[in-house]
Image (cartoon, rainbow, N blue to C red; front, side, top):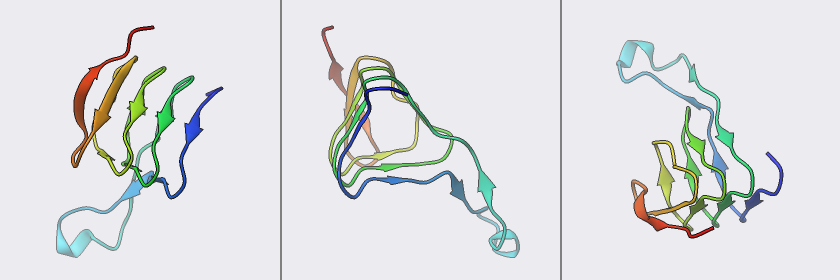
Length: 87
């Protein structure tokens, strides 16, 4: 959506592979949604099916495998809630 900041080296991965060895050659896809005014720090990785909330901040290097709520900051591997952003 509008006003999104995406730092250098960010990976937005809408596809993955099944765990089962005999099925790994196929793809599993899921959309990624990045809401208005979100900020994704350098080198972050956003995995399939994730929504980044409005005004949210994803810290540099974070690996996001779950939705990020509006007006929150997440960081780490896997990304975890750090704090709320006062708007």
